[in-house]
Length: 60
Image (cartoon, rainbow, N blue to C red; front, side):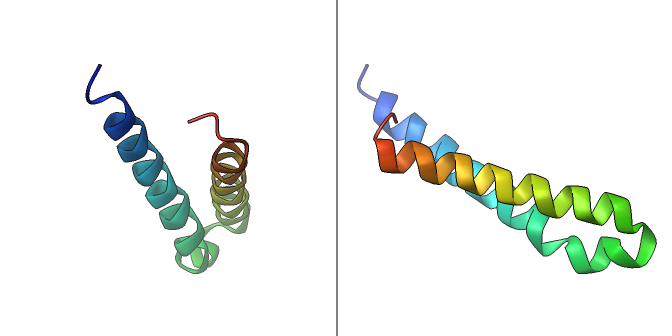
């Protein structure tokens, strides 16, 4: 498939963006609920680490 590599790269960029949004929302969410804020922060970091591991290993 011609667009396979493009689609995988696009999905990875979107996933990095979602992880960044989860991390960036931490200060806003901390005012409302500190547990949900920490869950958001940890989830964002896990997403970034998993994607960085995929890039490092070259599975994409």
